[in-house]
Length: 146
Length: 426
Picture 1 (cartoon, each protein chain N blue to C red):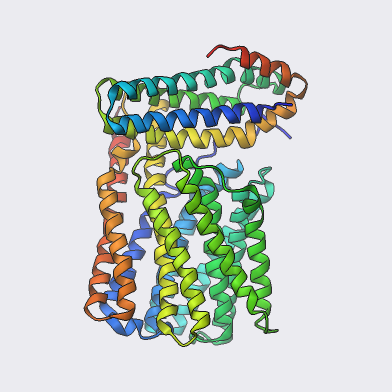
Picture 2: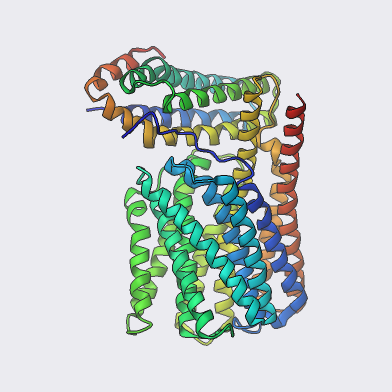
């Protein structure tokens, strides 16, 4: 049976690859290609955030009876990451590779430690408190279009 | 388990780790300066007082100081449990550690038994407090992550190394017992039980994180640290029951395995940008492999003092210092970005622009410092066999490298202070 850790952890890896592609394209200096790679990465991230913010977190909050726990921290870090997406958008529009790569490096560390916390704590916790609903929730997450 | 009480946000304030990180390059610069002043006689034998002071400037000064700061930063985040009274503890430990290191190391260089005991006492107290705090957090944490386990074992290894040193100090009334057989145990536990295990635990986190590599194999993460500790315990028993020469070779194989595995993961990295931290870490792993080679050569050709010095140099400067130096270029800018960002949000504004990591410490000065560090290491290795002018040049380049690291970190901190002050004024 697929678990939150499998499915969402796999999606983290997919986003990591999109991230590496976007950075490589920006460093390579082909702005057309960089724009496409950047948008693919941002779409992937927003899709991932959507699955969590719209499906997984509300279910977790309902089951644990609080919106102030770990999900609040995760939502906060999503906002911090979105602010960095905006910086990267702007750097891309102005074709400033250094600004893009500075923002992306910052995003990388933030994103990786965020993913580690989800994979090591939040997803396993979700599998416990949401054991009965896991399958149905995963179907709802998968049903969200890209 | 109370899920809601478990906060995932345990980042301590910047005043907890940053003073330690700023002290790191100062200890390295002091080591370089000492080498410059003492000249070739420092390298005559590994048992010279200067060599003793140099070694401890590296271990206690550079690596111990960084570890103290990093553990107080990382443990709360990794295990999800804050350390008690973070700020007073951080500052108390900082002063105790600084005073202890300065006393102990100057006593070693100058041969003052009384100061040696005071310094040793202060450092022991600091280590005891740190060990208790870290083990308490690891114990309470629900996390059984490989990094947490390796860090817990590393702190125990550190405590064992310190205990042996303390015994030697008391037993010989503060006279330096340089070539005592127990000294070998002290060195074994300090280098492998403490520094090596600590850096493996850190590597499990940061190598995949910074370069997007695959994870270390689960079996390696699970077993390397406990097996190394077991081997070290058996190896220590040789002190009383000699005869297992294979143990040393097994320990060396464990070290080589980790270095090779790290280099292999780095070749599989998905992030292929030029990155100064990556270069520092590759240098660290190559040095670690060369250290194993130097150790093995020393076993086969026991009467070569140059090999012993090369082993120490490759392990402490080539491996441990390179890894720490590289990490500081990621950790310090990220922490500064994170805290500025949080402060800006508390001020209720997303408008102001927080400098990104590469604006906090730009790539170019960091890379210049990497080349200085690389040149210093190469010159130091050459100087083991051709002292004289080469040694002086090596010491000068090492001094420049250390000061340049310090300068880069200080510039980052000044940026942080400036923007924080602006935020306060609104």
